[in-house]
Image (cartoon, rainbow, N blue to C red):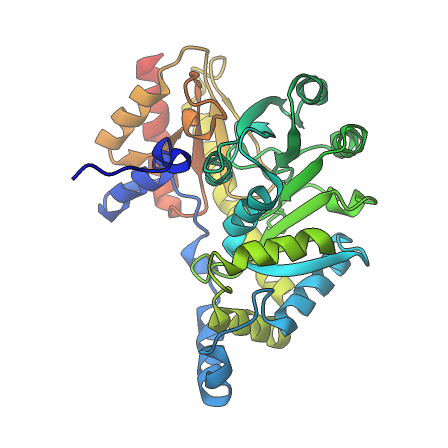
Length: 398
C-alpha cells in the first residue's frame, strides 16, 4: 500500500554517518567516519563488578520503573560535579537525566519551538542535532565559523535578519565536526548577544572533559546570570556510549517542561544504567579514569595529524587540517569546488571511511569542500595506513 508520512518526518533523510557506519562490518574497513569512543576506554571490569552488586543487592529497584527526572542519587552527583568542575549550576537550576545527550537536544527544541520558528547553529554542526531540529519543522539557519568558532558579526547579523529566533545551538568545546574550540572572548560575546536579543543558548558539551592539551575555557553556562543557557552533557564519551546516559542542567522552569515532554517520549531513562553510573561515581575516581582517556586520545590525535601532515607535504598549500586540543575529531578543508563526495567514494573502494562535510551543513543543498576524520576508534596501525591512503586519494583528485 501507499503510506502517508507526516510533514515533520517525510523530508528527513538518514544520517550520513549512520549509513557509512554500515560498512563497519567489513573487518578490512578503516573507520575514520565514526564518532565512537575508543573501546579500550570503557571501564569494563569496574562495570562488571558494579553490575553484579546491583543484581545481588538492589535488583528490584534497578529493574523497576523510575521517575522521569532521573535516579535521584545520580542527579545529585551530576549536579555536584557540574558545580565543582564547571561552575555551571545556579540555585535556580535543576538537572534531568536523559537517554543520551541527543535526547536533551531534542527535548529543548520540543519545548521551545513551534513550526516555523528559527534555530541558529554553527555551520557546520552536529548532524544528530540538526536532524532533531529539522523534525520539528523549524527554520534552521547556519552561521559561519572560522578558526576561533562562530563569527560574532555573522551571528548578530542573523539575529537581526531572522524572525522568531528561539535559540542558538552551539558546541563550543572540541566542536563536532571541526574539533575547534570557541575562544573565551567569543563566548562572552555570544552570551551578551543572547541577552541583547532575548534568545536561549543550547550549549552541547559532550567532549568538554576530553581536553588533552591547552587550557580549559569556561562554559557558557558558567556565565549565565539570567537562566538563558541550557547545558547538555553526557556520559557517552567518559564512561560508555552504549549505556545512553546524558543530562541537562537548566532553569527549573525549563527542566519542568522538558520532564513533561520526556514522559510522553520514553517515560524515563534506563534505570539499571543510571544506578550503575551512580555506583561508579561513588566507588571509583572518574577524574583518574578520564585522565587515561585523555592520554589515549592525545596519542591518537597526534598520530593522525602527524600522518596527515607528513603525507600531505607536497599539497599542504591546498589542504588544511585542524589541530584539536581535545575531543574526537579532526576537520580537513580543501579548495572550493573540491569533490569530497567523489573522494569519499574512492576511499570506500580502498576500505577507508570518512564523512563528507555536507552531512554537517545546515543547508545540505550547498557544496562543502571539507570532511571529518575520527581518531578515537581506529587502531594506531589503522591511523597510520588510513591517513596515507586519504592523502593519496586527495592528491589524485587535486
